[in-house]
Image (tube, rainbow, N blue to C red; front, side):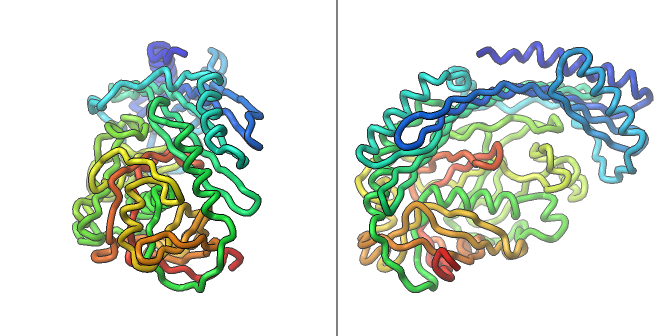
Length: 465
């Protein structure tokens, strides 16, 4: 599969010129042309039952004229489809309400330099390559039942606007997500990367099986505050929530975010960045407004430094856009999309047997006198955005830790916890040495998440209430 950026750039320029001619005057116009190749292999009951793939071209046209803004998109990209896109967008902008928040178009600016070129073999990999890794996963699960998916994605984007900004880029990603099941328990493992070669189906399957076997016959414990070790899979949820609700420029300017710039809101061991340039997480180098994305330091040594902005929220805040505009950012706000909690030392972990998953997690568990090891968060929902209080469930394995040892599995628990308060000064007792990448199930986001040892996490009941 070839990412034909030249053809998509030519299409963007053609639509731009047609729209400028049709609307006339000094209108602001920009065009994005995106091709997404998404391929997926699903497996259940330890065998592959579905291979699907889609290729979608989308052209998005935005016009701002006479103080009004209209946006339209089409997946019909022949001459007639593009002409219809221009016609209806020009008609819409003349009927749209006034747009006082319009912040203008991005001016000419170069892209930052990424640490590596996109791995096109990953983006275009076929079902045979995915099946090889699924087989390794299923074989490693052994006599247990395996289920999950393996996907690879390639996105080619061209952007141009009437201010002369013109960019193109390619993003590739592969991700595997699976579980191993016994009659009474399950264990999960997942990972994402820019390169398929980073994903080891056998190791992930063995991890899921070990966790499922160690989760059998769980016991109930009393709710309350427990010291916890959150595995990277659970920490990825924490990072996405912090980014979406907190490090969101629109939320900050509207007063619904917990963020207070320049204050020591987190433990000094906490440093958070949004980074599309390095590490295993794949991310675009420019946003839907044509603003380049660079490494953004959100928190350094516990001090909150920045939030993500599109052009609208940046104008409102009196700063510059960080390159985080998206299809819904005007309504929902801009948020980090490749957020990373910096690990203590970025080392490749040593695989170990049992529910601790890797040596980094095991080292944190060894420091706990009495607490819980949590694999996953599930169905998390926000109760209070100002304090970022979340409620949710544990999933895919919880264990009691006593005197540095994992002693027995625990039934799933409901928690109600402010995420920033859990990471406040003095509350972070340890950070793992390895930050694997995870792909969100709900959008083109990723998180690079090490394990966390926290002084307290508030469990409010069993999974049923």
